Length: 141
Figure 1 (cartoon, rainbow, N blue to C red):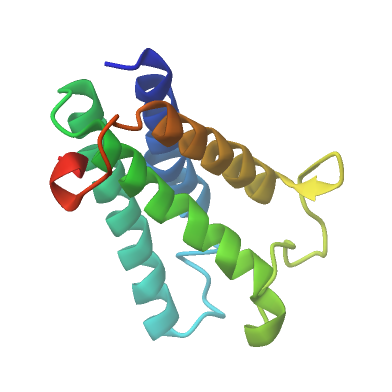
Figure 2 (cartoon, rainbow, N blue to C red):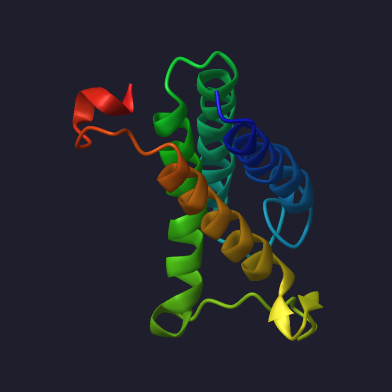
């Protein structure tokens, strides 16, 4: 088992499955009275789905049952976030707080920065776990 991949999947799961839900269980997100009820339902669904996928990824990587699948599940959470950020102008999305501020690292929104770093490292770990034979759906498991 590749310890680098185990650590990355675990850190990714902590971020997407625990830290982000904790940060979004407040009046600016899930309990935002300005959001339509339907949008809040989708927010709750997204948080629960990401937490469940994260838990599954941790199980798969720690049990060494399907390390590649664990990495892919982690990427399924982080990469679409980056795509949503990249296309935010097309649907009126933003990473800015309602007061126009944001947490940033070197001028990059903290959430985007973390997702970029984790996604890049997860992709690297996927390459490091690359099988010697061509990758097939069965090789993911």
